[in-house]
Each structure stands twice: as C-alpha cells, then as structure tokens.
Image (tube, rainbow, N blue to C red):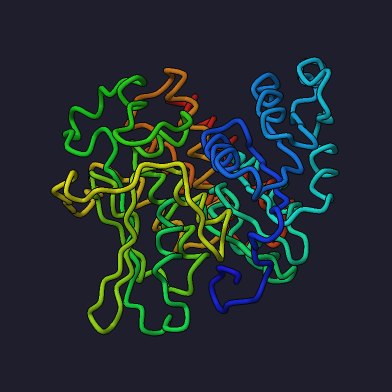
Amino acid sequence: MLVEPKSAVPGNACHADAPLRIIILGATGSVGQSACDIILSAPERFDVVALVANRNAKALAEMAIKLSARCAIVADADCYTCLSDALSGSTVEAGAGENAILDVLDRDADMVIGAIVGAAGLKPSLAAMKPGRTIALANKECLVSAGDLFMQEARRKNVTVLPVDSEHNAIFQVFERENASEVDKIILTASGGPFRTTSLAAMKDVTREQALKHPNFSMGSRITIDSATMMNKGFEVIEAFHLFPLSHDQLDVLVHPQQIVHGLVQYSDGSLLAQMGAPDMRIPLAHCMSWPERMPAPVEKLDLADIAQLTFEKPDLKRFPALRLAKEAMRRGQGATAVLNAADEVAVAAFLGGQIGFLDIAASVEATLEQAEAKGLLEVQDSLDDILELDGAARQICAEWLRSR
C-alpha cells in the first residue's frame, strides 16, 4: 500500500516468515536508536543490511556490531578512519562519503528507514526508492521541501511509503482509505511544547535551555525547538497533505498536552476514530517495521486509568505564528514550503547559537517567505536540483535578513 494523495498502489509487504532486510539512514539519531531497540527486541525478524550516520563514528560502530549489520557508513569522509578503527576485528564493512551511501542503497533491501535530519536527508531518501521497496519515512523535509516530487517518484517506482512520525502513523492506522470520500477531516495533536501557557510577552525572553525542555519527548535540538515554536506541527500538516487524499481545509490541529491521542479521523457519519499510545517513538516504528502485520514492541503499555484525564484545546496562532506560516506556505505550494523549511533551519541554528531571540525565529521565516515571493522564487519546482537551488537561495535570504537585524 502506498500512502499517497490520490490512490492506493500495491507495494512490498513485510512478512514475518523471512527476516526483513533493512537499511537505516540516520542510525545514531533518536529515531534511528529507537529503530535499533525494535530490532534488538526481535533480532530474528530483521537482517540489517546497513546503518548510515552523519559523523558519530563511535556510536555507529557500536550499534553496527550489536546489530550484526553488514555495513556501516558515515556521511563525513573525514570520520572514516575512526569508524574503520572502531570496527576493527568485526565482520562489519566500513564506508564513508556520499557515494558510499548511494552505493549501499543499491543493495538488496526490503525497507529503508529514512531518519536523516534536515534537507540533507532528501537526496538519499529519493535514492533509496527502488521498485517494490518500502520507505519508512521519518525525514520531514522529504515532504515539506519536496512533497510533490517525492510522492510522484514513489508512485512511479511503486514504492510503499509508511509514515513513522507518531501523528501520521496514528492517522494511517485509523484512516479508512476505502471510505476516504466520507472523511470530513483529520486532526493532528500537538503537546503545545514547553510554552503552551506562556504569555507572548514572556516568550520574548525565552532561553535556549528553556526551549530545549520538551515536556514529553527527548529529541534532537532542531526538532525540539520546532516543537516549542509549533513549526514542527506546521510541518506535519504539510506532510499530512501529501500523505493522505485530503484538501488543505480538511487538516486540523488540536493541542493535547498529555500526548496520548496522536491523531484522529472525523467521518461524515459523526464517528471520530483516534489512535492512542504512550509517547514513545518505538510504537509507530514497530508498526511500520512489521506492517502489514503487528509485532510486540519493547514499550510500556498504555493504562488509561493511570492517566485519568485527557484534555484538548485549540492552538493559539498569535503566540505560535509558525503554525500559521506553515499552513499559508502549504496553500502556496512546494516552492513556499521549501523556503519555509530552509529559513527555519537557519533561524533555529541562529537561536541555538544565541544570535536571535525565540520570537525572531518565526519573524525571520516570515520575512524570508515575503522576500522570496517578491523575487519570484516560489514558482513550481520540478526537479531535485531546482529544490536544492531554492533551498540555498532561501538560506541566503534568511541569513542576510538576520545579519541586517
């Protein structure tokens, strides 16, 4: 089954009668580590073809040896010696650089988990698409920056795309595709981040340390800041538009601090179906890694009696303008969403570096979108090269705007 905007296309199914041959892109990140936990919980179900990381050679080597991976690759070629030394005496093959990553993606594999953070994950995720293969997608930028291109390529190559993000995976589990015409809307939930009840005036003085304290998840620095601004939820709305056969107006967000309900689907007959689970990325990963079957996951089971109360509220777009910007960019098209992502990466890095304030993140993204549109840069981007060129232009515009501040 291909999760895509118009129709379901048969793809490769994962069966428990033979080990699933798997490649993990972004193996040392939080999603990659969770995927490795799943594999360690049921090693007989998986055959690890390759693990790929950016430059954390030591952690990558330890993981590759533990999982009996055939190959381990670092994107940064300068880290090759460190990786090779760490793998010395093992049977794990070492590699480094972009060409090594592209070569390993040509090896026989049933599933690739795309968990490289940022725009850097776009090219390898597209390269991972082979006829009949399954992509378990955790890289937001593939759909935010290049959603049209990515899903067209998936359809062309008959690739199954399974959503790893807990919210999209939740929708996937309760979305009745055969009854798609009877869906009124889907609802993605958001924790509200660390500043859910913080006043706009107080948010001007938010520190890096405060913004990095997510109430429920331990994640990388960029996605944690994006959760604090709610830009991450805006990205997820854009992703949902590409993953499910719905219009812009059928995508909604509710703030749900407990993060137990991850997604809901409202049907025309009044039914509201929800997927619930503990806030643990291993749950959606286990669903993807065993789909269309299910497997036990090494997670704590949900006990609603212990939770006792679930609350919901509408997001405040005045205090969290990033969500508004993302929805506007989605309506504008792929060029705007590519600029949105690029500017956000630059702005978040500037905030983490102490160069700008917390509220300046959304302000700089909005200014970049306005300038990019004034320059005529938001027209349809037809190729990966076009998108990468726009990505670079948007980063430059944002950087120049920040310097002018």
